[in-house]
Image (cartoon, rainbow, N blue to C red):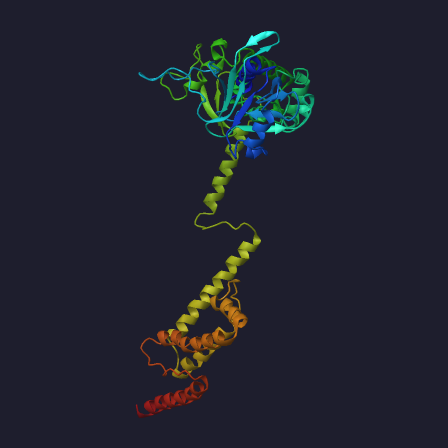
Length: 463
């Protein structure tokens, strides 16, 4: 991601090619993420910039902005891969891949992934004749942000999004003092690298800048921010101001960085015979706050509480907890979950017991008496102990609502279906004949039961 030095490079080219010039045309490409996420549209942006005279091009950390002869003004963020191209000018801080044989070396215009293009006509600027120029904002991954801020140009840093960001270490040197940094570190207890990366604390510090600052200050990135001595705070401030200032002054051109800088060698992760400084010290890559961090363990010693150590202890406790709870399918989120589990088990046992009772009835009379009970239960169903409604409960409510013929048909179907579970459960015992008329059926059951019982008694006497 472009950091404080890379954004300074963009501002440099905007200053050089657009300052004090009038934008004759602006063509913006609709994008509901790059514009829409910050409450702007491509149409509104295009309309606001057309005909405006550029009066300023400045930055605050990773944000940069163009001010015009009247509001609104343009505030932009490059995201991960955003950039500003100028036609016929190499603006990148790294060399582009060489074109293959047969491919033209001419710059493609407008570039791919363009979000907007502004054109300035040939004109005399500050007494100097200037050629026509075009500049384009490009972003392949659509993580950049382009917005309009309606306020006086002098007050733009007092409006969102700039007001929510911390001071710029280079532009706001009068604010970012040793005392100010010491207070910032002392009132938080977070890994120091995480504090530096938080744009609400400091604007412009990204991953490579933070690693460089901590390496030069001889501080471990995981050490808690409130655990440093006064001497360490002073060293950290000196490294912060030195790295950021040089990155801005060189426009992030790494060829101009000192050979002693970690940044010159930190990108060799995974390469054979790499990850070593010229003096032989080894570079190690670790994760801090989810970000890959390059450190030199022989130099960046842990002199206080370190977040990584605490994390390891937490993991050990979690591991012990997992062993103790081995075999459990899930951990209850709250006490109500425990109650639900307790209720479910008796319900399951009750179901199994009732099933066994149906499989082995003591007598035909008991078997037949059970049938009307099943039928009656379907008409008026109570909720199960575990709070799960019977599947017929909703059907009954719907039947009462609809009424009429649908209700009569539903009752008839249930009269026919009610005896089926008992018939299946009898396993070989001949069930009583089905009947569609409920009154006649109830009258026949006692007689059948009495006859069956009498035949059994007479059989025993004969034997």
